[in-house]
Length: 172
Image (cartoon, rainbow, N blue to C red):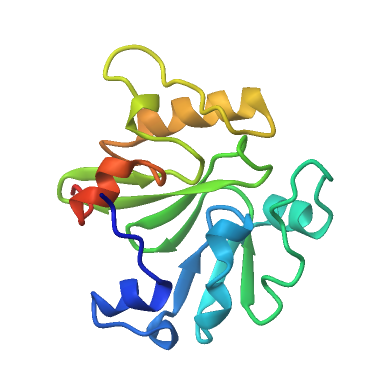
């Protein structure tokens, strides 16, 4: 099975503590993705402006936004595709949420894309279009974002793929 680790335990595997983290890229602001952000006290937190706007006034059907999750964070809002560091950029991929973003990292093996939406490798077949993830607020945007990620990425790292979790390392 896949061992689920506490945030601090996972950081410890690479000899880090939360206060060592200086950049956090939030793919979206659902509580299951950002409840540990406050522990990174020295980090700048990068979020799409559209996501921040929705976070401040979410639709009642999406109950996963907790208004206090960013209270202690230094938030940096971005709009659209933005370079965060040389070779690391965020790519706007709405659909799962209004301001979802994925992370594109230039590697020796090509562009690795960490998806910011709920999907796994089965959403990206080798032939044909990407399959729209089933959990989204906007189906058309989710479809377009999945196609964009498939076209952009030489290496795809879906955030909800169990096999990537089991492997213990990113396949780059």
